Image 1: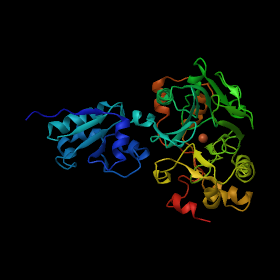
Image 2: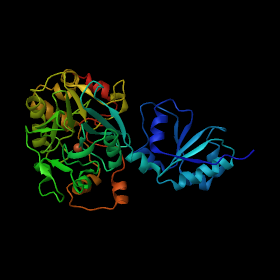
Image 3: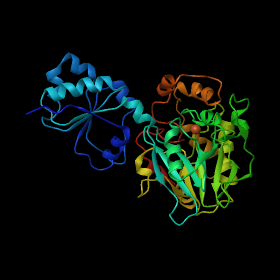
Image 4: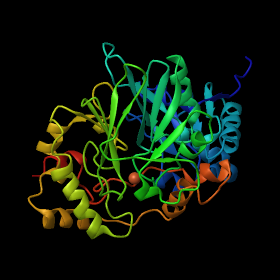
Length: 396
Ligand SMILES: [Fe+2]
């Protein structure tokens, strides 16, 4: 019988498969350190092992023997080449169904999954774009022939495609803050004719790309009869952090609040001052918003936070009742909570901030490397060992 060749699969396919009880083994052939630092995550658990590529070179049979014979295998590596090498080896050794990831883990890191948040009865469409490799969320709001994008990543074609499907094009890009953990697509959009990038000057003073300042309380209309987007200055995670309220129904909360915690105020090196601002934001500046407003965050920690439709969202009223960051009795207790959960930030964050201000230019390949890995933006993501997000929500 003719042997089946290994085939290429895409990051989008991988996401679809791992969300639906896959019948294959995912084999990661990166080195152990890279695997431990960052790996593929999806809405469900799935069989996933690590056998470094070098093991296959040094001990072919011993490495192959670690995989159950006849097993369907999908392989992930750093860039594609070593996964193809291992895929060829497995096929030569009788494995019947072997695939390897196109462009390696970088393509997983850049993949975006659009999920429609707004109902079909609404006059506009709001999408959450989940980036599984970064655990981050960006947004697209479409009405008539125009679209706004919020906190876009560099993978701009995905936002453009969804806008095109509605017969619309992106006319404004809003930043909730100057990101530290991923490279924004806004500077590239700023070069496009007819697209304006909106930023808070406190985070983007002297930015080296064309942009316009956001004004607190300003309303930005979309299309002729479209929704109203109101900018709310909500300092704390950064001093320029800004949330965007859509028709008093949705709050694009950036890294100010997530579904299970608040954003870290310590990334800028002034944690006490910024923690105080964050406390005042949660207690005062968001006070006028109704409990029913749907919080749509800039990040998540784990897929457990997604709702039944696979969307990261929560009612503000529920967060006020359940989230620890909202339940601390005074500023001092809030500062203690922040301090207990502080941890070093990845060294690359300083460079990413400079790229996002337009002050540091990097090639697309360098940007891919800088952009790898899960975010570190939540105040309590990994702070307390053994304390799950669920326990934190219920801790008070
Ligand atoms: Fe952030």
